[in-house]
Length: 564
Image (cartoon, rainbow, N blue to C red; front, side, top):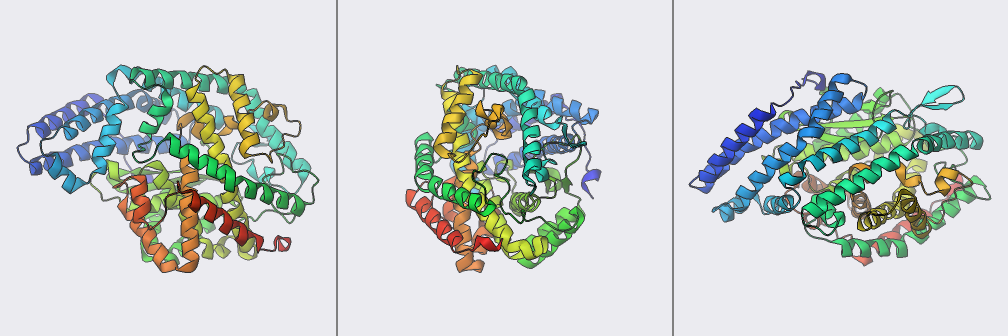
């Protein structure tokens, strides 16, 4: 059976609520822990069936946002996911109030109960219409980006397919392509800022109705952060500014020298080498075949996983008209199937996104048999460890994709990974400021971004681009609109992934076994619990950040980039 065979049927909401209600009533009346576990199994089957239909719809809608049927179905879920959340909240309350809670925790683990407690604090029936509005606004932002038609020299591109032009050795073409992209955002600036203004307002309203001081507190709770807080994240950002920003600035200076440019402009940042950026060879189909070889050789676990993905046609990789931007991995529970979505555009990013999303997919494939939907995935920052670490574990096979440019790719990728972290914390601090001061105007938010650029990204040269000079860069970042406070998770996970990179060079087998154990654990523990399980040190430890910054700096400094 392939993905095209997966049957989609809109859930009968009335029947779903009735069935869920009957099962919850039986769960509450059960006389033993085992009886409750038996009813929990049936509840999980019901929840997984709903999530299966949601994810099939989400995938097919994002593959073709112009498909009217799935556009309508996606709107159905935007409007009715709050109903699912309401029923889930009722179940969580019963779970937490169970007279057999101690026995259930021994069987199911304590993380489920921690997640249930946080979930109950993030939902009430009074906010359901606001949740519908939040979903609608998030979808509207993605539609704006999916509609982009970018004309350069008589050809039309979307926001994904224009990337090769932004990395072209011809500097004037890079500028033209990059300016065309930013012109699209400038033309839609009023609409995008209105969408975000409405999102900030509705999220703030939801937070106050739930009794939180502001959305920031609620946002952390929604992200299921049970073992760290805002103060720890702020300290992490400070450590990044102290140890990583200086190294990033040095790397941009080296890039400027490599390119023999007096100044590094915004349209030069994506162009790394005078000989051109490394590009993968072969067609998308050949990339898939090479990925199959790579995972066959890496381990028996990855071989089994990727053969399942290929045979099930569980990858949609190539950019096309009407397709949503970006890349993601999701999971279809009733088929035990991960799905990888991306937008190949002929750049090295194709291989990065392939290995990144394959890391997510391998994790959820490894934990797919858990009976609990809550344990299929870990919390977001832990999930990004799997994806970012997979990027490094696959380094020895980069010759399959880049040939003689494989060392150039690995050098460039390490640079991108370390220089990303300051951007990641800038996005995070931006959201803290916005949600702590929801009354800020769009213009004031743009100024906040400009101030953060000076703090974390001092290399950024707007070079006269009026949209960027006005602080609009952040409006391209989908996470800010769709997944508030998610972005710091990438930075935290990158510090963990760098630890796997360090360990992989010292003892591959030991590092890989710890990684597989981490993937198999799914979401059964909290973030820092999973970090410890994997034999890693907490990214909140300043000495860890200092050590990684020093190690990466020394490693990159030994490489003669003039060879590239």
